[in-house]
Structure formats: C-alpha cells, structure tokens
Image 1: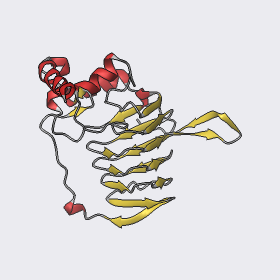
Image 2: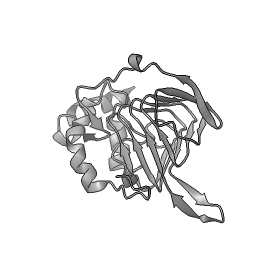
Image 3: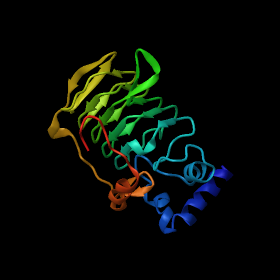
Image 4: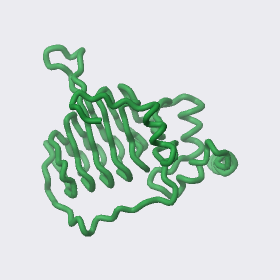
Length: 215
C-alpha cells in the first residue's frame, strides 16, 4: 500500500512535466499509464523501445517500428502477450487487446524454418481481441470486430462489425452498425505520444515498406 501511494504521488508530481503529461492525461482511459509502468520500461529498460506501455511478461519481437498502434491501443499492455513484428502490424484507435494474445506478422519458410516470410496484420478501430486469441499473418479485421477468447484467426474479415470465434475462427455473429459507439477521449494518446504529436513521430520513427504495396 505504501508503495502504491508513493507511485501515485510521483505520478501527480512528474505528470506536471510536459514530457510526462501522459501520467495524468491517460488516467480513466482504457490504457492508463502509471508511473511504475513508465519507470520500469523507460528507466529500467524492461521492454524498452515501443512507444506504448508493455507489460513485463509480454514480448514485442521483430521491430517495434513496424507497429502502428492507435489511440488507447497498446498491444502487450496486458500480461502474457506475444507481438511479432517482423512484418507490419497496424491497429486502429480504441481497440482493446486482452491477456495472452498473439499477433503474428510473419511465417517461417516451410523448407527452411530459419527464414521468415514478412507479411502484415491489420486490425481496425474499436475492436476487442479476447484472452488467448491468436491473429496470424495476412489477416485484416475491420472496425468493431470482436475476436472470442482462444480463437485462431487465419482469414480476414475486412468488413468488420462481427464476432469471430473458434479454430479456425469464423463469423458467429453480425453486429448492428447503428448500435456501435465511436467514443472519443478528451485527451488522446498513442501510448506515451500525444495524438497531436503522433503524425510527426510516426513519420520519423515508423517503417511501413510492405511488400503488399500499401503505405
């Protein structure tokens, strides 16, 4: 309890600094950043690199610069996740990713498992990826796609507004678009980066030279 109070006090104090404003601004969002998260990642170096908070039991492999994470979207924020960014990964705004989720953007070459075939994963906005789900390469999921716990997604559902479940995952329900809410936060962040600063950050730091021709 004493440690928690100290971290909370530190967040209030350091959150007044312009570069650490996210400590205050992200509270109450679906991916709040605590002082402990920032300290562990950026100062102690646990999962250093990604521009969003990553749980110490989660892994981001390949190249974090191949990942474009939307507002309040932090792949690996929950425990036990594996995010493989040998290929490219794009995830839209306000998408929630549960614990123990795998997102895989490259397959091994069948004839030589030492080699990879870089590909892509694209996940839309306002999606929900349930616990233990796995998203495999060459998959595109549209906005408001819900992936059930433990599902293995091998095929795209680019139209979105649906629920996927099973292995291999199939559409088990369609959502009523008129009932889907596109909420916004007052202060928006891509992980540690304020949304207003993200375009310039992405231009300088992220790589999207995909073989499929998209940018």
